[in-house]
Amino acid sequence: MSDVTAGGRADPAGPLPVRGLLEVAVTHPRDVPGCVEGGADRLAVVAPGASYASAPEPALVSAVARSSGLPVRALLRLPPADGAAPYAADAASLDQLADLAREYVALGAEGVVLGFLDADLEVDVWACRELLAAVPGTPWTFHRAIDDTLDPVRSWGRVVDLPGVTSVRSGGSPQGLAQGYEDLLALARRSLEVARLLMPAGGLAAEHVPWFAREGVRQLHLGTQVRPGASYRSYVDAGYVRSWRRLLDGAVDRDQRTDWAAT
Image (cartoon, rainbow, N blue to C red; front, side, top):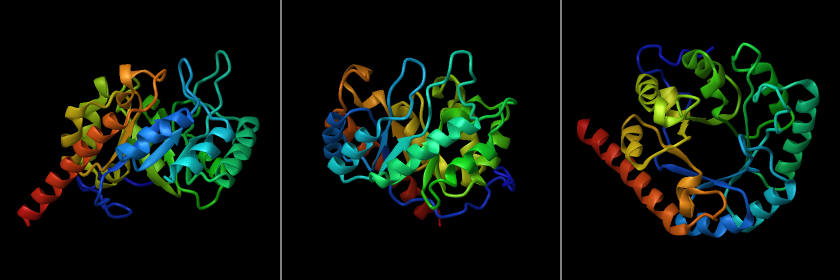
């Protein structure tokens, strides 16, 4: 298991991306023009729900992949049954999700989004590996299930050891960045491995971005921030995406110039 805090700043599995990566949640084909025109790098396709987003219909994934020309990742998550733990997985649900994963990739998805916890609120490494085996070699994102674990440092160590993971969405707390921002920023500061994979999500605000960039965080996930009224009832607006694009690029550029000046 990787020690994400060893030596203060652990060596990453790969280099930090030079340019920031801006990912936008998409729930309808009409979201695509705003994402493309605004300068998004990747689209995360989901079916919104009252409490939790779930796996989108394959037809939506296909339409978004064909019309956007951007990398697309689709969420692999079934709506939780009444009374069931929201991030639990069993053999039957994994079989169903594996079929969906193969279909998404066949329809043009570049990657997938997933994450499971066991009964002890630990990262369910077995479930993740079982599902990833259905689409070997496919890059993927671990979603905000990590925020519901009891020991975030141990959870990050388990996630970074999983094959093919390129992003981890996190708000640092089940309540999101409103509560978890400081802890999440400190974790990125202590570990280059965390900074390389971290994709802040869950109430991300503009004022957070320069500070995350300063710690080497290069990926952002946006949902309602790029929709008029901050609601999934409205479609993604190109102007809103463009403002975040400029914010991220400016923060990354300033961080890189600061690093260069310090050498």
